[in-house]
Image 1 (tube, rainbow, N blue to C red):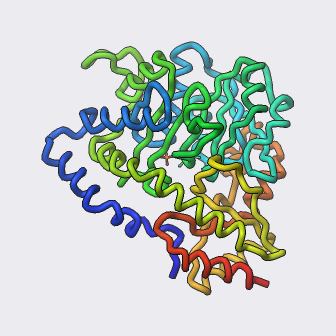
Image 2 (tube, rainbow, N blue to C red; image 1 turned 180 degrees about the vertical axis):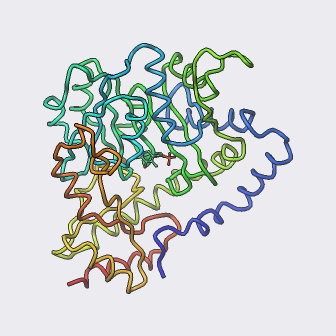
Length: 368
Ligand SMILES: *Cc1c(COP(=O)(O)O)cnc(C)c1O
């Protein structure tokens, strides 16, 4: 059996470091907002290349806190709109709608799955204050055209970097390309905790301060509340774990890229297509999607040969039941809808052996 991602095996490869890091926190007697969080925030800001990193409870909150932060700073108002990709994980859109903001969806480029930047001008309304771009699958969604668009219309550029830790664009990390970025450390993300975790990175000191306060009830000093905030803290155990795992992130990204290279050169079946290969450095392969009109039959065929695959994702956000009464959810996003109808994710993670990858490639190539 080749599991999609054997997290137990993967996390065991960090021992004894992980257990020691957890032990240190347990015996320190300090479990929230203390030195392990401070150390991780500093290391993570350095790694991403921003002045500030602020820990929080998860990736959904990280996006929410950035948007709330800009609302408190007066740069986004209740009822404003945010441009966002239709092809994304549900949480991206939920962060917008839970604040009473309005998502303006933009369809994907069929060659990459990322925002089709040629559609941005047409989607723009005078209510749009920000573009929330998602480096989906671990692939950089930012490009020159996006940069020009954002600058021309004076929009905030917010990155959802939940799937792309360690991804680069022309020498800069994703998470440092826009005005602020949200990160998730959900256990199976490329940088994953042993539970929930998230962070916000930015060069903007005002935003960093507001977000830090908002994540701690809106508190400025003990029992003084400047904002009606939320409770969204990164805890000491997760921060200590993340510091251990961050030290090996680049090495593990290299392994992910080697596996992706094997898939690109090995998969050869007229019934299966893949995205165009990303430029050097611009992909960290959180997910490796392939496309097949007969997805269910291919998934069952692979399962019979002991290969577990997943679907990212079966239904796009704008087609989810909870949004069925929203006006923006009625629009048609043909490329996104086709991606969701045909996508299948192959196992791709540092815990896999080369022999596993060869087996997966032969299995796909024998599918008729
Ligand atoms: C995982 C993920 C999130 C949410 O992160 P959580 O930590 O699970 O809240 C947001 N956006 C994208 C693209 C994700 O993949």
